[in-house]
Length: 225
Image 1 (tube, helix red, strand yellow):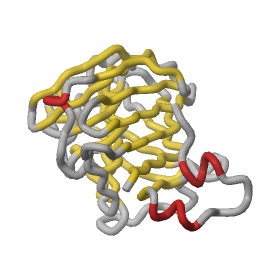
Image 2: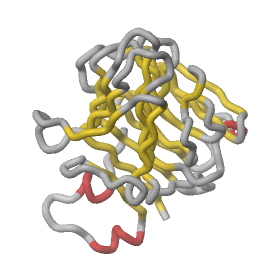
Image 3: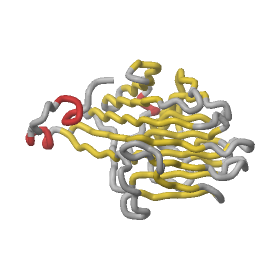
């Protein structure tokens, strides 16, 4: 996936004019997020959010805690809102891993919704994300507008292995999905690209047997102005 503005191109001197070119937000989880101010944390009966004691340079752990189906943890960045618009480009990227493959998984952008995954299905009506609800760590690419969605080719997670997930939204024309900077899928159906504000969002819930933990090293997202 292409480089991000300041983070991708600067060599030591920040060009202030770039701030007028795009809106940027992100988190490397050096300190714990603040509920109801920076993030909304939701647990489905069980679920926990904490910083990794052993994680280098900040890693957030979303822990399903229980091995009961659909129970687990969800976070959304309330302060960030990225709305697909004609002529604007959105770039989203996150470094994540899971310790167990029995996981109901979501990483990407979604409207504010306390149940992004409900009853073992992606239930939020507006989103663009990598998701998995098949209890085997197989991610699919997913875009949905007002309940009209489509999916594409995905990627098989490997337990304990960090992967970089990238999403590029080109206006209202197409959405491209990347794994470790390699294009894996493109969705080019305008009817499936949401036109509401979307927040960086993550979900880690149990398949009914495992109690998985999602590790988030960082996420970042930007949109051209």
